Length: 522
Image 1 (cartoon, rainbow, N blue to C red):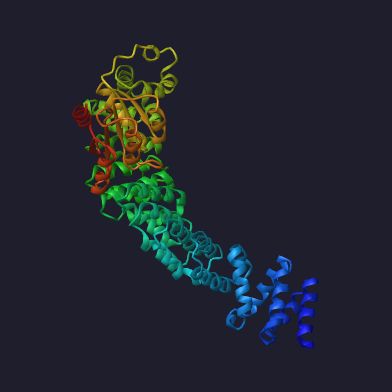
Image 2 (cartoon, rainbow, N blue to C red):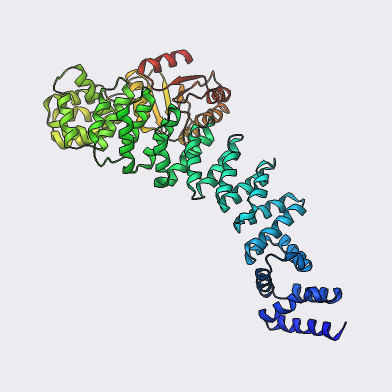
């Protein structure tokens, strides 16, 4: 070793000992001029140096040499070897350098776990130049590599990264759900548009996840949901209205109101619109809600009654009083609808109307489901007086009549559950309602009804998944399951039958349809 070479080595050891970055950079810059043996010794000193100094020195060095890595092969290999062991160290280096080195490693390693780790690291450093290479792993056939590439492309979040994710949608439920979750985190409008477009997916589980993610996005998703209201597909319209209702933002009232004015020939769509408005406080134009009370479909009328209760004002109060002036059978049916919809504000406000009071009390006392009576009793006490004879009659416990069958109904729509409760009660059945499928799954482990009615599109657990769970314990003959759905997708229906659904009926349902379906499976 020449005197100059010895000086290089001695100086570098001194730099390391005193944590001198500037002078250390000078020595590293001279590496190409050193003899091979000296270079190896300098690199050995570097590798044995404290990690904090080693990382800081190399990060500064590569920041200066970003476009000239080929001139320093030994440092590149040393850095790659350390990144192979600890990929998280990539955060210390310039993004372009780290991306280049990690991609080289990704091409070299064969261990799947290590590949997955490197893919994840590329996302964590938001390596823009890695988008195209990462997109190839979306089709790797390995779940861990596919999942990590989805995560990393979502973390990078550029236009091209988002487009690669969107183009991968549609072939696998598990992959789709992972992509949807990544898209929701990108903060990109194109990603939000893809989520709203996905409401038209034929897959119930991933479609339901898209709805949940849109609800979580809240106001950010509103412009794209409004755009969906111009679509003609009834399934997309229903899912869009469901999401708008769940978000519950008052800004959505006007677009939904305008949508209703244009009207829809599909009762399920109209129901979804009024149901959504039942969760939204309208800043104005609430009069349009009264139109739903005259709808031909009982479900739409019931949803309208609940939306009116949510947005009850003087205009609606007067409008309803005008509708009751005829004091005929249609007027009595309207009172029943308000009570079955649990429209507490409306009932309280109209108790000063003799016709309304008389018919409301008669229905509550003689016909309403006990749960409805319990809901209205405090309000009727307040308006009629504690000792009113009719209220005393309502508070008398009566022996529960024997039921023909016990029927369970599960649906994430409270309005649909109210309709089940009212209709099944009128038909003489004892019903138990579940807003969340998980509750039914827990209860069925210790109890068994005669029949289950289920929705298809529910959060967390779809109707198809619920059926699969029930079928692990009860056969189709032992416990019939009837699916009531708005969904027109044939793929969903095929999967439902495979899962053990006995019968599929279309919403909106009527008492007659419920009875006919019960008769067929009993």
